Amino acid sequence: MDLPIAFTGRMQRMLGEDYTRFKAALQQDPPVSIRLNPAKTSSASIAGINLPHVPWASQGYYLPERPLFTLDPLLHAGTYYVQEASSMFLEQALQQAADLLQPLRVLDLCGAPGGKSTQLASLISPDSLLVSNEVIRSRASILAENITKWGSGNVLVTNNDPRDFKRLSGFFDVMVVDAPCSGEGMFRKDAHAVQEWSEENVKLCAQRQQRILTEVWEALKPGGVLIYSTCTWNETENEENMAWLTMQQQAESINLTLPLEWNIVPTQLNGVRGYRFYPHLVQGEGFFMAVLRKTGEAAKDYGSSKKKKYKLTIAGKKEKALVYDWLQRPEQYEWLQHNEIISAIPAGLFEAADEIYQKLFVVYAGTDVAEVNGKKLKPMHALALSQQLNRDAFKAAELDLGQALRYLRKEDIQLNLGGNNWLLLQYSGVPLGWAKQMGNRINNYYPKEWRIRMELPQELTARSLFSLNQFKV
Image (tube, rainbow, N blue to C red; front, side, top):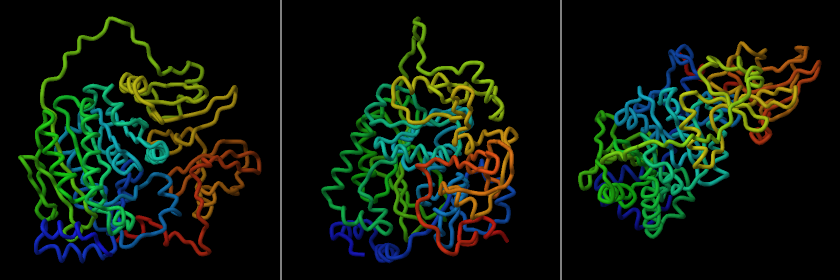
């Protein structure tokens, strides 16, 4: 790997004698890591797993090599997420800076493709609200897909520019900004990042990050927490930007307590603390994180005497009754209807969700449950993947690996079950989606836009895919 001269000079000055080890680490293959979905993996299923643990992430594990993730049905079922290990450090920042037992309003501003958002969804309480945002529409669709697969019912996916969040003054308790950056920490994974790097690009990235932070700051309430991260090493985009923010706004640095054996490098500039990840010290890519608390007084809310007009529409009693038993604990949800789609959101989040709908562009929210068209009722794919699905309400069919892959490719499958029913198709006991049994015919209802497009290898066994059972002792 040919590194830019200006980059190597700066890293030599920053690391001193450690630079040789750092440069050697950049020539090595990056580690492979995954993070499990605790709602879809029982404690029994991970008992006895003989895999190295990502030390700062309760659900993070390293794999000995990279399997065929795309052809693993469990990936499409939201059982785990393939995530770079260093970025899983978000768990430590959130746990130490916020009270996760309380209902929180959390914003993941730069959410796509979904690694941090799905991690946040697993960490916050069920009565908390996560708004996962992505400014680029095509990436927002990918984000919505991954959020849907994860199955949390308390997430809203939005497609907005950071400046739009000024409309939500003091709304969020926690704000995660994984800012677009120069990507130095991704050099060994992405040759394009090396080619695109320049000192001028570093400056442009830092300016863009400052714009993002300035525009979104209003939406963080006083006392709220900002978790800022990049996948780069230069101080311009990291420590200097955090020091700049504390001078521009009312904010104070939050210190995190970390075991020395993690080899995360703490830094400090003008009283602002940061945490650095280097590939010669940790099993992970380059990463930086800092945590700030917004200080100052909250604006007084005198309320309004006007009757509030809601944008969200409550589902009618008739429509609600059709699907009421499709979720566990249905009484805990507000049932909504938009055109033919019935969806559900935790009742305690209705007011906050409606405010988001009033002021932002929402791509997806809560759990889409069913499509009602006259007397026809079709369960939505999101329902099959939902952590709140009531499986007792549906007939289920277990698929083997070949059947599951054909289903995920939206090809015909044969089950020979008979009858005329909606079938919840499962792989290894985890729901994949819906099919309609029509006598001897099975109609495949897997979403066309999500189907697996790559050709199947001639020889494919469960051993060639990721499976926790492979690593049990």
